[in-house]
Image (cartoon, rainbow, N blue to C red; front, side):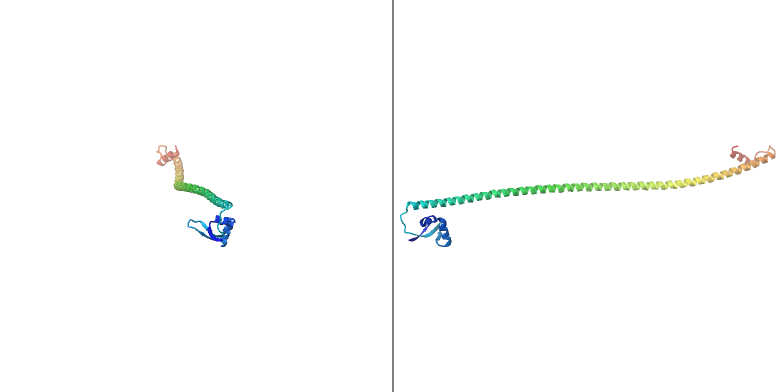
Amino acid sequence: MSDTWMTLAAAAAALNVHPRTIERRIASGKIRSRRTDDGQILLLVDVPDIQPLQSDALETVKELAQDQVSLATGSASAIVRLAQSDAQRARGELELVRQKVGHVRRSARTAWITVASMAAIVCVAVGWTTFQITKSRTQIEAMNQTSQRIESEAKQLLVERDNARQDADRARLAGAEASGRLAAYQEHAQLAAKQSDIRPTTRPASLMQKIANAMAGE
């Protein structure tokens, strides 16, 4: 019996066990192991003295080697598939993120357009309201001026009416006075006529009689 450094596959073949059994023994410290400069793991195994290898031992080693290669290839393939799956998933997530970013940008653009439209509408509304207020103020001022003018004209008409009433009153007084004078003249004329009938007819009519006759329309 001698301790010999050999690979995992060779140790499994020499001990006639499965490689997983060798790995468990390494983990439990029952078999020493070391790593070479090229990264290969060697195991220190206590094996019988070297004897000519038989064909079945060679076949076992070949099978174990093929198993290791297949296992490594499968692991590599699985890793590649996982990497591809991760890459595909990352591309899908990236596409979703891009879509979300595009949606957010479109939403932001729509929001800005809406805000700009509302601002324009507010500006138009403020301008229209200001115009209407200015127009209303102008109309109110014009109506106030018209009202003042009408009020002034009404006052002037009242003054003219009062003056006309005063003129009418004075005219009535003058007419009454004239009527009184006319009546007095007529009465005086009648008295003068009666006296003239008594006096000689050759006497000329007096001035008062002539005036009374003229006013009486005789």
